[in-house]
Length: 176
Length: 363
View 1 (tube, helix red, strand yellow):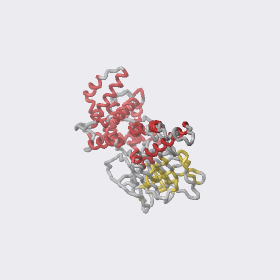
View 2 (cartoon, chains in turn purple, brown):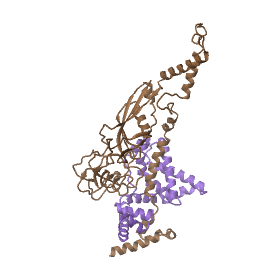
View 3 (cartoon, helix red, strand yellow):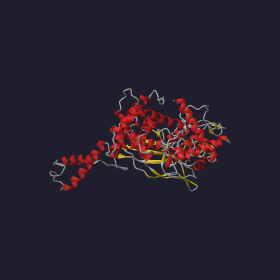
View 4 (tube, helix red, strand yellow):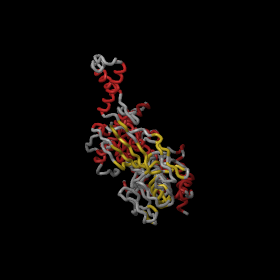
């Protein structure tokens, strides 16, 4: 699986964010999909995944000044925080946090990369196709609701849906 | 017809995939497998909301946010004040001086001395001298004046046109300059480019007469947005940039620029005239004095150019005349908290451009 392309200037982005935390936005945009995918794989549902992802980024921003560049990608540091957040959450629920490391070793990275890539590719779709995918699969709205929002017939929306998924499949194929 | 039948058939399978009782079933078709994975993606609104939340939390929790509350000048309004520590020092100083026999009249013999009155008078004078010496006797006046400066941050008053859109971010579109006007819009403007590698790259334009000239820069954005930090396409919903509707840039509706509608450029803030009343400050806490300026007794006036929006809030604050030494920032910080009775035109509140003069004086 080919990893998502990373900017060559990640170190500069980190140092800029350490000087001015408002610049953290760039790091957030670069890493959000992976962190969310990492969390979502282990969360019970979307709401829980979103809460835990928010916690990871809050902790990351709060401790950013302590981050020291050692050549490892920034996402590795974020995964470390995410693991701690998940472990604390599992501990509260009475689950065994040891499963986290086992899960990680069982090919979890490929799945995270795939989901992060999928999220990125959805963003690259044409606006109407992106809207159909988000409304239909993420928000799970009916074809009728999507058709009303876009001002198109239900048949046209179904075709958009099919075309969007075909595009995603092709793009995923080219990336992997 | 075949394509439509395929789409219908595929959608019926998607429907089954999305049913709660069937959501755990494994899809064998590659496209349906992809659909199953898409169900797990985050809501795009969550992504942008979290980004805004991070910034807000950081701003409210940063170290200097707390120290402002304990600043010795906190609570000063239009006159002299001092913190508890300064008051205590002054009183102690006055008590020490009060022990001098001559000043208490004990040896004068000419006039009977009222010791209590004398001590009160002496202590208050000593306190006043101490305050003046320490440079914290501050008078800060503010004045609201009609704008005399032409701001490059406003849209030209060239008509009622406008436009805007966005991608449902919860923050305003990033400040910047719009792309050029064109009679034909092939591609709408975007601040955050969602598709960095389009198959057919086309220059973005806003729809309007090409002879309309607006400031240009490398940063596409909304000229009058207050958001200067976070990359955002704005709160609109049609995939261009801005907080309105349509494929333009700004808070309006249509493919143009600014708060108006139907292309072109419009909606610039008004300036006070006979028919347009100027805004009036109704809540105007005074600014603090910067430590740096207080130490060297730096005084003067900061002029801020700003737009009072129809809701009575100061927008697009910029320094028209700087005083330096941290006083510009203090003036902006205070004026951001001000509330105004908005300017009125034909009985309706409108955005009005004004200048605010903030005086910093030490006595």
